[in-house]
Amino acid sequence: MATKEQVSAELVKMGFSESDSEALADCMVNGNSLSWVNADPVDDAMLELLNKFIEVNNAKVKVSVKDVPTRGKYLWDVKSTD
Image (cartoon, one colour):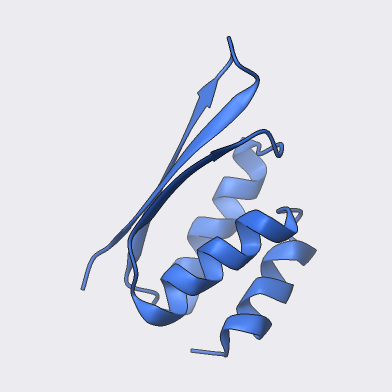
């Protein structure tokens, strides 16, 4: 797998925010689990790209994102599968 910075840069190109990209990259490269909440927009097309990226790069993580419409936020849950 690429470096954390390289992975983060690719995720930003897919449309993810800097903060989401940095957190995701850390989990993918280091095999960490992490949960966070923020208001940075995420849509199904972005999540589809993310899942393909995870598969192609054999990252050992599973990502779940839940929309919290009453708060205008997204709940991220990234779990290591290793």
